[in-house]
Image (cartoon, rainbow, N blue to C red):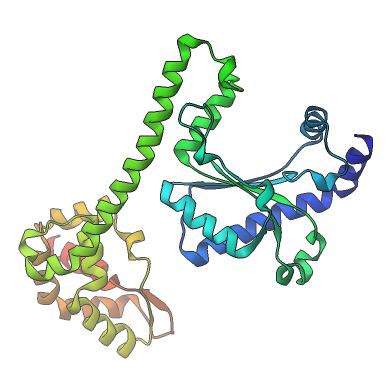
Length: 320
């Protein structure tokens, strides 16, 4: 133990730097894949915890034998995202399969939080880079789980639960029931996400076919602003042709909120057909309003931005 703790003290700075580097790297990789997670937690095991682990296991001969000195926990919103991140981890890191475990596959009659654990190393092509060269042999652990799985683990920890034999028989039924409810909730949230995605994917065609039947809400407004042919043609003509702006195609949803929706409805616009009619009727006024806002300086504009200008500068002023 003395030798392992001495090695730990000697390498503490390197371990803490790896901790920070992994957090930055994982954030970057997730962003590249377009995967949004609830939280990323990283930590270096503290000295007291390390000492307790060595005493409890009685099997470690060196610091390298302990694979979770540095840990990264990735907490997702949805259960299907766990597998997406697992694929990413397997592609980007060297996985120690012998020490990795899928705790989501525990028996239904066993207690314990469900989580996917990987023990990994950095790949050679990454450790050849100067910023990662100090971590060539260092193993670290990934834990990937949903918010609900994380909540279950935290509550277990707070209750001091360590195994099914520590739970009185009178409480076991409650444990089983709560575990089943959380697992079913994870399943239902994935179904709910899929239902909403199907609705949003079909909106563009529904708007073309029956615009008067599509009420103004976040999904329909986002679809109109980003996919309507009149909006696209107008913005290509004005933003690109007149102002030499770069049109960003990906983040209009950041501007669509309840305030904007209420603002539109307060103008007497209740459905997409009414919004499109107002857009076409006020193209000239929108073009004039844009002259007051933008100068041809090569800046960027989000796709659908002309609808924001229509609402905030044209129709609102007209009503006022």
